[in-house]
Length: 543
Image (cartoon, rainbow, N blue to C red; front, top):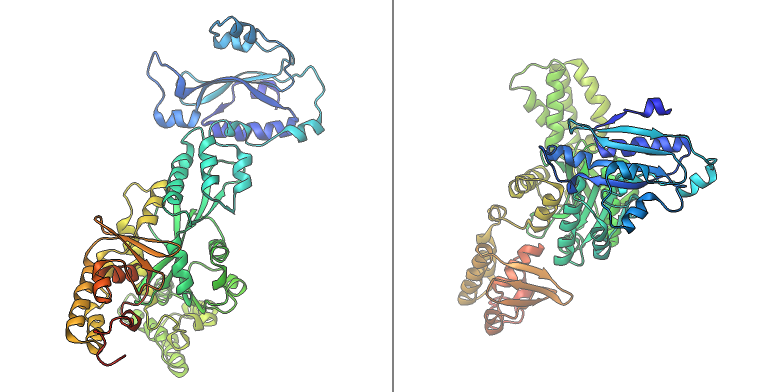
């Protein structure tokens, strides 16, 4: 591109110019650097300034790029030595040396950047070897946020608190929400130094593409309950980012978070990335996972066999049914009440014979195009979603209902302003809600204690169990065990969650509200005979 073609070229953002400039430099083997600039954020306006969103995109009112070979003294240095304020015109005349330069200015309408001057003839030979050594893509974009070489280096790696603080130290603007997101991640590490975090940046851009995060408590749950995992995308989470969650089932038959992955919409291979990150964080579960249930849109089924060799793959049955129902209507099935029951009969078949009979009935009533689709796409995977072949390591848990309740809770607890930074802050503080505890059968737990305890201890246990569900506590894991704060006092518990420092436990040696609340939080069973072993007065039939 010659001077005539370059002169007057327009750009609607600084990033657009930066990407164009990188490619142009690579084609011409020219090395340029910034001589001077006027950031829009520092400009004083005699008339109306550009709109905020335009100012964020353009970033500069004026910038002068000169050949890297500019050497020696300049008029600009002389003026600065004399403490004389220079104008843009004087600065444009300042460089002495190679005359090659490019001047970029905001237009009069204040909605784009325009190349107002370009001199592309150098007074020295261009050296491809020197270009290869010195050229760095993203140099211009670096100047407005973070060094691209730094983000490229840490991308796809686990980062710690020192890495995040290093990035914050050199982050110049809030561009693309990076600074806000780094502050949110710094807050995560401040409250939970043992958290695991992996960042992925868009290559050669200071844009966060993917965040994998796992708190200390999530890692602990995953270690204790690795038998069955559940993985899917949360629909309707965010306009820009998708949220993928990994769940396990705790001892109280509730779905609990084992990890989160936030990714720009359309990012491929999310199951592989998430599982690899999870196994790097909790490596000892690799051969302990017996089943992983996936959303129907996830794909990558071969990844499970590679990463979790002992795990069986299943699909959320309700999602399969919804997919089949939609496809049947699309292919001409009658819109009546018979289609859904037909599909359900196939999915709920309790024997091989019942399955074959249900498919045969469906074959006689539904369009042949649909049946061809069924036999090509879903028959080969029938063992992953038909009840007869289902593997049930989660002790009778309805996987689809578990996932549905979890998604509803997430979407209800997230802030309306769902920037990436705010989403991260919300996700790490989401705890059990009162809605979660509605399905917990407190009466059943109390009845089991009554069956083995003397009446008075059983009554005290029932009372403490009730308090554990209806009061708010802040619970943290420590190297010795757990700490619970109730806004008045702090109590410590051992790692096995059988003893507590509170007066209720020390006076009776019976399980207190703090032990029950922490067991709820960590997923440990509420009914546990080991909670009674130290109390001689409690046990009625067991010594």
